[in-house]
Length: 454
Image (cartoon, rainbow, N blue to C red; front, side, top):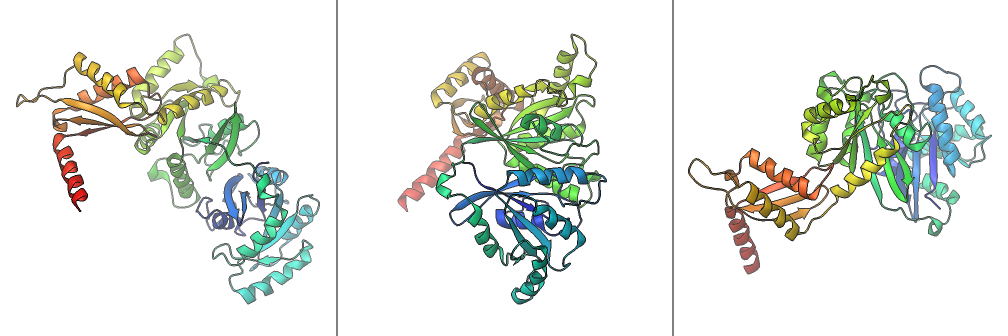
């Protein structure tokens, strides 16, 4: 069976995301002193003792208000509880029992899932017990005093929690997965795209820019391959972003790029390629991630027989940082060609992890040099490539040993990269070429000799 799931629920601003970060051991969820920061479900893997499990952070539950995102947040929380084998109901020990706590407790008593009552903000042990005692009135069993910030009492909470888990030997180990980050400007359709992949309302979709704040992980399996899809906050220009929820959301989006294998760079077909899209493309290339350019809202574009070709040429010319990335035109709203995105993800992920033998690399180098010899400098000295070898993957990095790197200008270096791509592929992935001169090799050799003598 899969990993057990635990949902953390409660009213806004009681510290649910702080506890998620504490249990996961890393600052995943956005924590900010403002109600309503968390909106979607965020899943994080945790462990305690012999048990691995998944914890789900949810938005603050408010039953008496249907304004803005609150009904959608409730639906996200309800879905999380349906998936869970246990629920942690978090309350605020400093505030005491509120009307909202009574409403949530009454609703939880109608659910079939076990409920563990956690009283947060109980930093001092003796004082915490006194604060927690009031919550016996909720009728949900023994309240456990904890501190999400300092970790006090979380061991007792987890000991009680794992009593509701299946035998760890019956839990199936995780299979290899491809991590896919969905990146783009606000309101280009990233959350709609994730919902189209999962076939459910996994993320809240709204015409209001900035709806998504946390990085939202979802697992999708297709043809035996598992994908971890990461929806992220829309990334605006830095000068327009104020410190707060949006700032932290963008920071999580950049971290999602770093922890992914493949990035889906989503562009609004109606807006075309913007300066911000170009900056994001540069960031993806600098991080060394594979990339697929997804042009969304293609259904809203007036087209003729030449539109897709003209648009492709424009995107390729303006996205010079990732001109190696395949381009796919989709509509998250209608589902048009959405399934084909994962076909492209499979291809570029394989190329991103690919290793090529030294013999094959040098065959390409020999042919490339015979067609176009290295340039000659003004001093009459010509560059010479001795051989090349791949030193790493994800992204592929190739060292070229030459007589002097300064004798190879940018045009020739781009030529060599194009020859590698045309002969060997490397579709959708950055290709790192490291030009190493004779002096560098001599210094390395001397250092190795000294180390051997020592």
